[in-house]
Length: 229
Image (tube, rainbow, N blue to C red; front, top):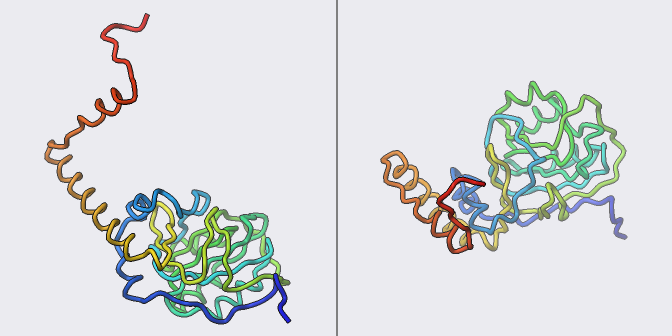
């Protein structure tokens, strides 16, 4: 008999590792631009530690302020997985701290995303394990449940499904659906190459900015050759 709200799905469909790795080094901003600036976690979810993030999602839904299911997820997740915790954005109690994150690093996980609070932030800042969170508080968590593992969750205003490809850097995190990944990858690579070309043009002083006036005129902006009365 199913128990909605307190259950664990033990298997997920992980994308091919080579497909995941193909996104390494691409800026999140470039990827996000190619998918209409959608599927980007909102700015509440900020990078805490040193490393950038790349891997498949292993999802957890917890009660606000409770980390029982998060503990179980750390036991279940495979090396390279990104454990994504929907803690309802609540920052009253921390969901994790240094001890759990040391364990996650030892297990070879690819990163942690918490839509909720963390603590021991001074230690976490020095870790190579990518950790992102919505806030910081010294108040500790409860361990009562309920919750669910490997179900769709809402994190940073985006639905994340088990197996989704997550890419994170200093700017934030983008979610890539595996079925769209190949097309998104091609577009993101072209976008990145175009921006690198623009950087070179800026350095050389050859960047063409005539598009600005064209856009202003096309949108009806009035140019008045006089001082404001």
